[in-house]
Image (cartoon, rainbow, N blue to C red; front, side):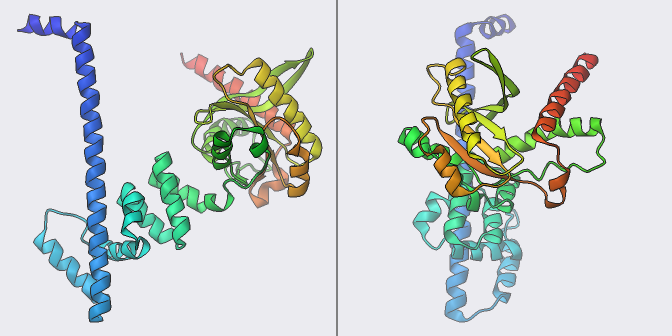
Length: 351
């Protein structure tokens, strides 16, 4: 038997069969978990709806929830979720999703604790539904959803000045608008006047992850201070990313001053060079994002309107008490480069 098992385990066809079955079982487990979650949330909605109806019909106050909690826990001791607090959430949940059709489309597709968070934080029904849909699409954890609400993603997403409508196909233009924000919050750059050089280097490396989180789902970091040879001269991109859903390179130029029209010309040059030197046949047109301290919307829109390359102009928001203490763009680039070299040297020393 042992010999036969060994022969099977080394057989390519058997391994393929085993891996296929494992994948099918995992998929089935995931679907079952999702189905259980949806069934539970629909039950919670029905309980909340019953409480609402009976309170209105009978004139019962909040004490009925306390009594229901006690009786339900006694009847179903093996089940959790019947605390007075959770029953209160169920009532609020039924109020928040009064349309049962929309409930099945949106509310029932995210975890219960996500729903509780939305009930607590968001009072506007359209806004709540928007965050729920984004959670479904991006698979946000509860902590990420909290961060997106606290940084007011709903109010700032899709508001940068762009020329996407005239430079990108409709489908990509729509998606690109959904990906962008304005402003981008860079509060994680908690630098002080007395920061030591090594501390600054470590902070810049560490906070690249925070910057990726602020940019949103789909951004993959390609390089910093990326060199381009244009007509025999060297030019350097502040940051180069690749967006996995847009399937294109994204150039980000960080400006510590107000937007100026000449920034768009420089970005237009960079996009043309990246499209010529880096873009493959399967890549879509490169997009440029200019991040400035502030912008005059009219000037920004005029500056990019007739350009052939897709460009967005957005703003970044820094901690108010640190505005005057941050390094210039050139210093930031130099320190980040030093930080990367330091990190590489530390990695080599530990090998």
